Length: 232
Image (cartoon, rainbow, N blue to C red; front, side, top):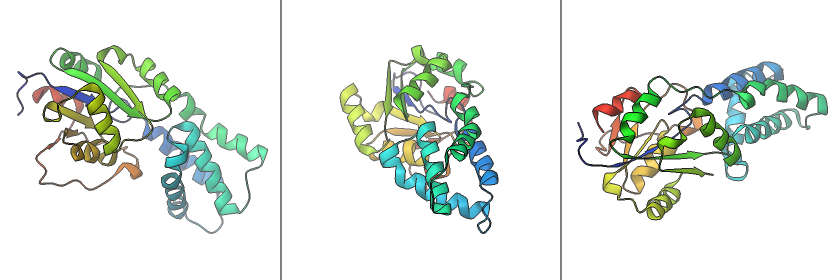
């Protein structure tokens, strides 16, 4: 158990750590696979194509609902050797209405846990995605005032983490990244010397998965968000 006496910097991921996100995308993908009704490919095979498109386009299109719709359109084009017509594009947009307009719903215990932690430590938020979309989510969450700084970034990699550490004057030895994504939250944080708290989620996007070193004692794995209070 880590001491709560020394003030530390706790950097929180947002989507699928503080509130649900990927489940909405997965629901749209399931509807898209049914709608596509490809005569030769299984749902799993189509999903593999979509995963490859999303992986390749993340660099140029970024993340978020609008990038996601572009990826669905490209998947259709790849599998059908033609672009969507206007009616088909409207149908895909209709599939994604709940995703685009979804209400931010905090996970159980998040607000109360952050309120206690804010009295003990310096809290920051670091989330990737489209700035307007992420800003809307943060505002809707009601959590913005909990954080001394909020960072919306296009990607989470070691260079981005190092930049925030430098810009905020953080001490890596007393700073922790807290999130559900091995690829975006845990591994790059550890690469620049931050501690990391991994809170697994059953809804973590497949492209955010990565193997963690079980012998890395700089990674603390917790079963739930409120468990943070026992360590910080």
